[in-house]
Length: 575
Image: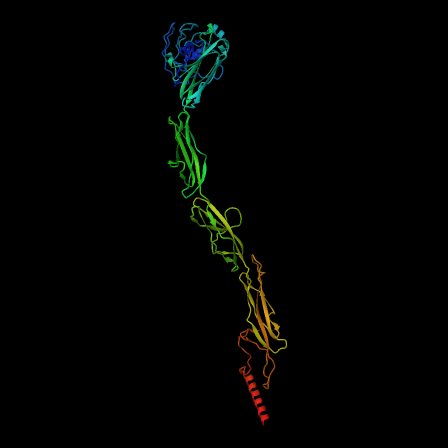
């Protein structure tokens, strides 16, 4: 809708007279800057951007001094891209019709400058040399848009700036007047004159004003004419359209946000969204999650990314939507591994190691841990998987354990398993040995001692004195040692040498001589008191005579003989 018309009477009268001339003139003539009826007025016309005007009946061949107003279509004229072409030679009597008006009369009557009543539609008279000369060279050019688009900024619409001017041709004459008018309908006849809203009258070639218009489409035109007795019928008409567009509402949403889950359901998230329209003012906003689930500030959002779309609709059913993303993250799970472990090797392959590893998510739900041998490189471990009770080799093995929760959260921890061999070999030595000998230097004693290491296996044994040595009379302590230091194995501790001892006792041996009163010393072999002799003979095997008599026969006989001899001496003395 146009605002109330407030044009002053004088302005209205002058503008009306000029507008009346423009409306009564044919479309091609209105676009010309020469006298209507000249070739330029009949052979050129601007295209009509407005709706097709109502057709008018054919004009009378001879215009009367005071013709009755007839509905005349008039085509809007866009701004020329450049200077208008010079008038073409006079066309044949059947001049080309205007693009937006009815066909021109085949035999139009000539027009006379200054005739009362104005020119008729489609007038195609011979050019007037006097008028053309007065107009001067060149064509009148209009500066200003033919299509003005402005978006409304408030309930009242928008302020539309209008700036038009002419140059060239007769616009350089001393006195030029112009007027501009707009209408909310396309005016194509003087019968619609009352629909015009005149914007003003100017004395000069430039027109500038600002008008506040509501949302809608308006049609306008500006008309300039020189004030001269010789140029009463020269004018320039410029049509234009104004479109005040309906602004779409705006929706303001927060930027994408992140929250940490407080439970398995997610986390409450607060946000603010608003809508506004230039005409309606603040608008209510509706926010939805995927699946058209309503979303409001303070709602609990699930773990993961959720897109929220907020929309606002104005009173003209125009809707605008904006989106933002709410990302709820789950706290990382935790993983528990043992402290570094050190185990003693139980064999050449190492030792079986027990350990416990596991994790849980932020809700306390237990999570299994996957443990693998780790080489220390960044990223997940790629070594073989290990579990409690597996055998770890000698040396250090690094283990990385990982847990993953249902939301994709990961956690890892490492520990070291060290398998060492700090236990020396186990030495086996014979029991204490006792031998008898009649040799002056003692007795030669042989024995066997062995050593076995859990990792290195059998290892050599060193004894001092060594087996096969001559042991003197009495008791000698034999010390045997063994070490696996030369074994090709890795340990975390120095090898220890282990030792074991046993004794060798050498006694003098006395045997009866031929008279039964004594004999030479002879070595005693065999196990005495459960000891192993140099030959490894069984225990309790005392030296036996060749006759096979018991070993106690000779001493018994000797004792009896001594007892008898003593008794004889006693009897002899009494006698």
